Amino acid sequence: MGGRTNTWGRSCFRHGPLDFKPASRQGYGDDWPLDYDELAPYYDKVERLVGIAGQADRYPNMPDGIYAGPPHPWRCTERDLKAACDRIGVPVLSERTAALSAPHDGRPKCHYCSGCGRGCPVGARFSTLDAIIPKLQGRPNFTLRTHAVAREVLVDDRGHARGVSFIDARTRKDEEVHARAVVLAASTVETGRLLLNSRSRQHPQGLANSSGRVGHHLMDTIKSGPMVGILPSWRNRPRVNDDGAGGSHATIPRFNYDRSHGYHGGYFILIGTGFGRSATATSGIPGYGASLKEEIHSRFGSTLSLRGYGESLSRYDNRFEIDPDRTDAYGIPQVRFTCGHGDNERRMMEDMYGWMERILRACGAEILPYQKRLEPLGDATHECGTARMGLDAKTSVLNRWGQAHDVPNLFVTDASGFVTSPGTHGITTWIMALAWRASEYLAEGLRTGDIG
Image 1 (cartoon, rainbow, N blue to C red):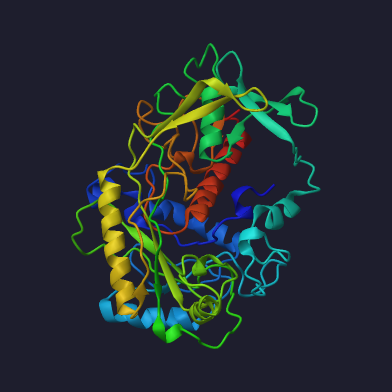
Image 2: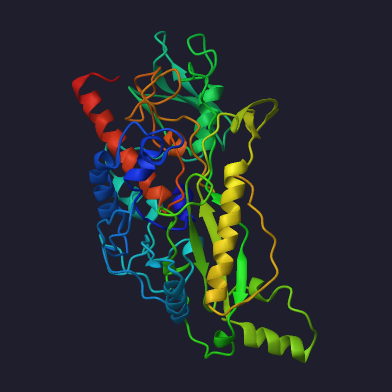
């Protein structure tokens, strides 16, 4: 239980007005069927639930939020980076992260063991397993059914959702659960697979797919390869415990709003410094014996790594579909992918590497050999967009509430509904804010009888 919040990166910046309206305000792509002001109250609710360490920075298109505590203090290496970036006009902000810097909602603050990517033994780092499931357990209207492998969404004679068919992973028996409404939040690929596998007389192309868009417009945050530099001033520095709250305490936000750059969208740059426990910083060092050991000792803690994360444009041809020849271990048809980077992403990559090199040189770093590349789509695990929201049922799957155009009692509350994938931080809290908004709409519809 807990999904990706068991291992997520915990960055919790809000997306701003430009991110919701790229077509009308930035001249490319498609606008979302809602705007930032409509979602802001739900960002408030999510941030109060999650508990964010951060501060108000008044940064363009990155609205300030509600913080449970101050940002985590910067390492000395991050302060050095900030000074160098100031000299070349590159902004550096404190991370807004879902690792507590002060006690919140019965959870303690982070004690800096730096193991956030492997789970948190005290619950200082937010996950649904630690912070939400315990609040639900014991409630009469909540049942947690584990080891349940969803096969398809079931429909009635009207084509409305009536429940879900699933396989018990332990007994391998087919079972069903019935409901007035069905909500899918299985992550983009699994939600799309469920919809495409839910074929029926009423929905021959798959559920909620009269537009033919389910599985199309697949996006993921594009991710450059790393660029690493060694700072002579950091060599042989005194060893200290600067593990921190897992990952960096500072970040370089998107900063290309006011300059010409030859591509659409933007990106942020992720920072890596400090005395980590990984051995990767020493890979490729030449030498043997005593000289090799001396170089490893000298270099430890002296590296600065940078990696760009940017916008992937929505393209119809980037897609997945049901594979007619392959099934999973439970006999459920799998999906196959047809996707890749386009010219816009490659032009953005060139800009990423140009600025990363400029930043490292401003720091006085010796830049290690590197290859310009973009990681394959899926590497950033921010996949989204394959059941997109929209006002027109002919070109979208969901309406502005995450409700299927074709099936009024079916909702999708993961990133499948994304219209764009902006090059700014904070995918998870964006999903949660949209899900909270959809849940309130669904609850009111069930109460009034307009849904179900």
